[in-house]
Image: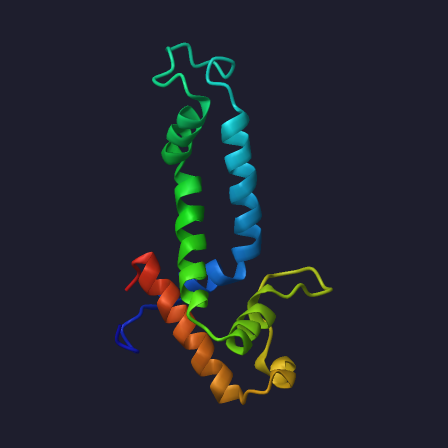
Length: 143
């Protein structure tokens, strides 16, 4: 992907996918558990189940859930983008996007100034983060 060929909207979506990755993992697991535990006969669905296998029925309900599809797509994009990094580069992504801060408020990445102990220059960290964001955007199909 060309370095300059990404829109502001695509950049923001990829950044949000990185920022919300830990919460998306938890929400996806909860949603999966809820869909597996839901019995279609008790939820008001009077039609006869297509499959007698409850796991297959849950998989069908999961595929029909737009939120579950979006979460799965964002989780996979982040995991694919981060999987190609070296451990010290993964640490930069973890510290910048996933480390919990004590204050509550708008979720945003940590500033590079607070990541100096990781052994990279600010420009080096920006290059790594930019590459990951471009990869996530590419996996999400954003342009």
